[in-house]
Length: 74
Image (cartoon, rainbow, N blue to C red):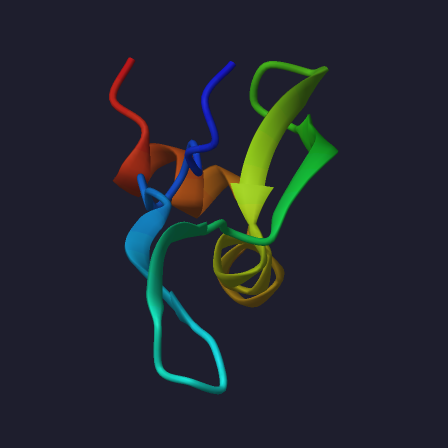
């Protein structure tokens, strides 16, 4: 599975690692992803999602059912 958030669709960023001498080496900035189970009251079952911390905050604020309607098209 790729390192992508299933809710916000965020991807890893590319950039440079800089040494003390300012030498540039390519690197990737990965997301803070978590595999988390949520209870979906409409389907009456658990859903496992791979989400970023931003998506986790959105789910805590608005609820899983609103987020699933808005971000995931079935």
